[in-house]
Image (cartoon, rainbow, N blue to C red; front, side, top):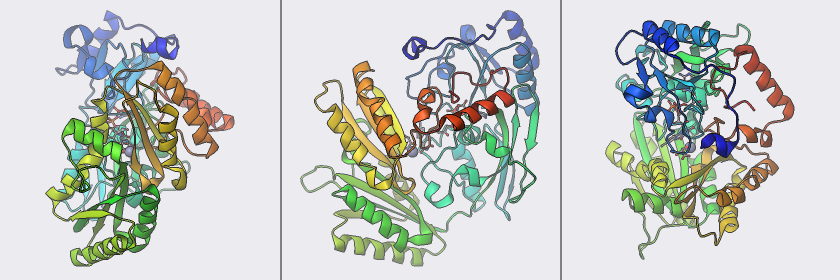
Amino acid sequence: QTAERYAIARGKFQVLSQQHLDHFRRLLPSSGSVLTAEEDGLDGYNVDWLKTVRGQSRVVLKPSTTEEVSAILRYCSEHSLAVCPQGGNTGLVGGSVPVFDEIVLSMSRMDKIISVDEISGTLVCEAGCILERISDHLAEKGLRMPLDLGAKGSCQLGGNISTNAGGLRLLRYGSLHGSILGAEFVMADGTVIDVLSEMRKDNTGYDLKQLIVGSEGTLGVVTKLSFACPPKPASEAVALLACDSFEDVLCLFREARQGLAEILSAFEFYDAASAGVAREHLGLSSPLLRDDGTESPFYVLVETGGSNARHDEEKVHAFLERMLSTGRVQNGTMATEPSKIKALWATRERITEALLHDGYVYKYDVSLPLRDLYGAVEATRERLAGHPGVTRVVGFGHVGDGNLHLNITSPQYEEAIADLLEPWLWEQVAAARGSISAEHGVGFKKRDVLGYSKSPEALSLMRQLKDTMDPKGILNPYKTVP
Ligand code: FAD
Ligand code: MLT
Ligand code: ZN
């Protein structure tokens, strides 16, 4: 079905045979490391989180060591078998599931924490470690993972690096390109590249680990990682604010950067339609509803993290008072206790989950100049106005990063809606010199529209890199590289 919708042909790879399976069972003797469609049912590995892409893999391999990953890839390369590396399968662009019958290489068993250096703040671990488990482990040692996102309970660090996930704290800690210190990865022919440095500085030629950041399983399989982790802030606060216009949201952002300065750790927004979907499907109601019970047009979530609770709270209070007095904020609430902080984050973090309950989600993740960010949502509403199939158009995202999440839902996929959205939206983004994928990556869904954000020369260099590192094209074929 997918192949028909996207009109692509299967690559000239071998089809899995009993002989291949027997070989994999010899390579991975421990129980549960080789799963088959016939015996285990592989829907959880073949279908993506959004339930919009479905592959037909007949086997899932779960290696426990780098040596096993290397042996699998060497064999697949020699026998022209295509492979789809998979982490927590929370990716939103169809990159983590097979398109046809690619072998799924699940990294879930490679989940050891190798070391944490509390003095330098260095974490070394295997790629299959789940983000939330690592964050909790680091917190016990007074450290913090520089990445946080709504999928933290299932996504893996290897998946985060492979997608260069942005998330909720990029504003404070920068992208993973800056936090990664080293990596071990296995190339398509089985060669292990060990650049697992724990040093902050290493200018010994090309920075090879950066090649795998955002490469979405197309250049190598990540097996180990090291990260620079900042200290966990001793004091944290979150404010949820209600605004009447997006102009007010932007004004607040400018003031927050100036007034909260070094303690500002996140600045997120969501609109009334986003709050509405979370309330409708998940029962999450806003603490800031208006007197008549309606949603505010916009909500802003400001998070701070510092080292001195009194100083930080004073700063946040002064900021809030200033904003309330200027009329840029209509209402607000603040929390400093962990359970209340979590409750204030809940709606923002669970919009993605709530949208799925509408049926089909047309998901867009774009970078735009800040002043144009919400204009894209309004223009989309106008374009789709009166279309009977559309359930809602919502806008939310990472204001601090100029990253809009524009989502449209309908009970089921409708080509007429998709045709109204594309290429129209890509053209708007290209005209603003924005990015057609700010943080979710390219995967299967965006591969053919990369030209809206990258020049032909840049795309050709991407292709050359792919051909050099994976000459037979067995790693995540049909994804990322046009
Ligand atoms: P998968 O989904 O399993 O894989 C993603 C890609 O990486 C695939 O191309 C896969 O082949 C490759 N891959 C995975 N592991 C490896 C490996 N070890 N070696 C080589 N390649 C590998 N993204 C953001 O950027 N910011 C957000 O705020 C954010 N929030 C989210 C919230 C929700 C509720 C959900 C469902 C998703 C969200 N995402 C977000 C999208 C997603 O990119 C991240 O969840 C995450 O980075 C994917 O990690 P994963 O382990 O699930 O990887
Ligand atoms: C988010 O910021 O919540 C994520 O990127 C998920 C999404 O865009 O749906
Ligand atoms: Zn996001």
